[in-house]
Structures are given as structure tokens and as C-alpha cells.
Image 1 (spheres, rainbow, N blue to C red):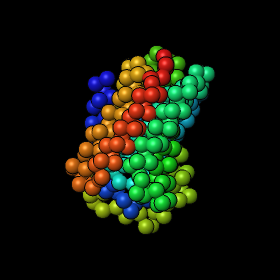
Image 2: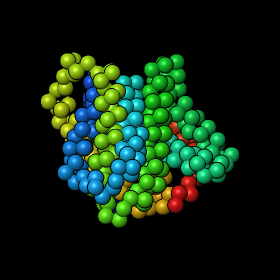
Image 3: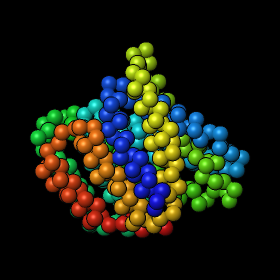
Length: 282
């Protein structure tokens, strides 16, 4: 649990920092962050301990959990404040519960209620922007990002126990990062104008920090910690970063928010997480 709390604090500052990269192509930023993350863990890679089949599964997990998630998540910042992005990640535990229930055949009516409360909460926060298709699109991007991150967590929890005994987390973690990098590279080749990609020195420093810290170390510790807690704790800790992230975005990065709507919408979304309840992951 200590690992997950530490990562939550690390990620809390990331929302405001990412907003500072506004104007840069999000696919390029995702590619660079993941390339830096992979560079951190590549020296520890021991592929012979895993095997080709398991290595491919890990790469596919990373392509979804980190690659697709980042492509969607970073694009949302063009439409939303950093505190809104932080708040809208609150539905990740709901997705974890829904996906696990669907795969295990344990569907419950309360899951629909949980989804409805989450959408209602988001509507309260975005009420004045309801006619702005960009803002609504940003919310949808965050939800798709949450879905990818939730699916990746479920997949990691299933794939990791089946690896050989000699395969440590550090010796295999470059594989999911490589899968994520491959996906973002493919997207970037189609969408990025690299001749126009010109970060300032401070933006380069932010990209390096986010790549090595929030992405590399953060993802590693999160996945490692996710196998050491029960499902209820994992669901709850998925949202530990949210009040911290919202507070950092408003207090540290000086974003302006309608606090009444923010608190009311956040409360509705939190109720949705509570109604969904913990999944029964083993």
C-alpha cells in the first residue's frame, strides 16, 4: 500500500506539469515519455527468463495500459483544465469493477447506477461547457484513457503470476513499456509533424522528468504494488491521486475553478465509485 500511496503523490503533480506542455503534439510527448521510461528499465531486461509468448503478452498489456492510455489522456489536455483531467480519472475503479464483472460473469444492476452517478457528476462539473464539443470530447478522451488503464491493470494481475519464478518485476518491465512505445510510435508516424515540434528548455525538462519519474518509476511501482493489495484497496488507491491532483492544479499551478460545482460533481462521482463497490479480483 505504501508503494501505491507514494505513486499517487508523484502523479498528483503530473497533471499541472502536463498542462504546461500545451501546444506540443500529444503523440510526440507520449512517445518521448515512454522512450525515456524504456531507457530507464532496458538495462534490467532479462528476456530469456520470460520466453517469447509471455513477452508478447506483456508487450500487449503495455500497449493498452500505457500506450493507448497516454495517447488518449494527453490529447484531453487540449480541451480541459488539469484539475478536470484529474477529477475525471475518478471513474477508473468503476471501469476496473465493470470489466472484471463482465469477464467473470458477475454483472450487477448497481454497476449501471455507478456509471450513471459518474456521468451525472461529470455533467455537474461541465455544466457551463455542455455546448462546447471540445470540452465534452475531452471528457470522453479521459474516460477512454481510464478504460485502457483499468484493462491494463486487470491484464497485468493475470499475466504476472504466470511468469517464471526467476522473472522479477524489474527484469520484465521493459517489455510492456516496449509495447507501449511501439504503439505510440505508430500513431506518431501518422500524426506528428516533427519539424514543428519545438519544446522550450523547460518543456524538455518536464518531459524528461515525467518520462523517468511519473511514467517510468511511477508505472513500475504502481504495477508492483497492485499485486500486493486486495482488489478493494487497489480500487480505492486508484483515486488517492485525485484530491491531491486537483489541489495541486488549483493551489500550485493556479488554475481557477468553480469550487461549488467541483465539489458537488466530485461527490457524485465518488458515490458512483462507492456504489460500484470493490471488484472480486483474486
